[in-house]
Amino acid sequence: MSGILHFTGNNVIQNLKIITMKNLYIYILFLIFSCSYGQELNLPVWTQYLADNDFVISPTYAGIGDNLKVRANGLTQWVGIKNAPDNQSLYADFRIANQSGVGISLYNDRNGNTRQKGMKLSFAHHIILDYTSKQYLSFGLSYNINSFRIDIENFQPTEEIPIVDPSITDDRSVSNNNFDVGLLYRFNRFYLSFNANNFLSKDVDDFVGFEPSKLLNYQVYTGYVIRSKRNKNVEFEPSVFYQMFNSDKRSSTDINFKYRKFNRSGDYYWVGGSYRFLNDQLLKPLNVGPMAGIMKNRLYFAYSYQVTINDLSGFNSGTHVVTIGLDFLQGISNCACTKGTSWRKYKNNGNN
Image (cartoon, rainbow, N blue to C red; front, side):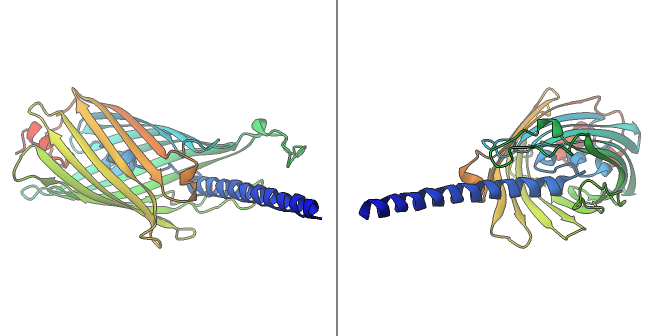
């Protein structure tokens, strides 16, 4: 009898372990699915915009700062988890007139067996509200082309599903055309932007019953560049980024801080940190982590590391974002409304 009880107890423990592992896998899949649902036909926003690339946030930034700015980002989320989200993106914006700019962004996003690709074509116009106090207002518009695809060729039989559904035979994909619109107000070294992304409803594809038809989301980005009184080459930049999806009112907030130091030639380095949380869970951050970047002879490099603060933290080494870039053809326009917020950029363009 004791042998039977011992044998039965071992089976119970083993079954509990199997159940626990299955629950963990289900939880992981749920989070990945939720992330994919939230990013569907939207450009994923992590910390790319903090790599001195505000154009990620809004088309209103096109043509502000250096005449031609290029940024390439590589993002790997939840390193250590198989088929976790992975993203590559490219941004470029430049000035086409004294007070206007255009830009383009491309992205490729992979999440398990789903693929998203997209392109944005942007236009911005900047006007001077008051030259003396450096008040400017910018308008931006983007045309978006996005595609969402399921890689059915990667479906393989498993122990739980030994036979793949024979009805899945064709390419499961859907495309969407949409628009973003934005406003940007700048007052000296203060900035505030509002953006409405994907404000048109899209056609729903019949092969996915839960596919959302409304992808509208709002983004607010604000911050202030503080010049150090002790060292004129040092700046501090606190900022806040808020995003809300109109369909189910999901929202999150990033609280950011950057320290930037310039040298005499205009090159600089910066360090900072970011804290992201759901707005109904202020003290339970989704991600938190450091970041740093350097500009040298118009060449740019930045790195960001985000720790995942949830039950997945023991199964991955966090999210990594690498940014490389190039700024050139600076100073073609002398219009004050196209100069960046940074004090050093004002000085380099002859506006002290």
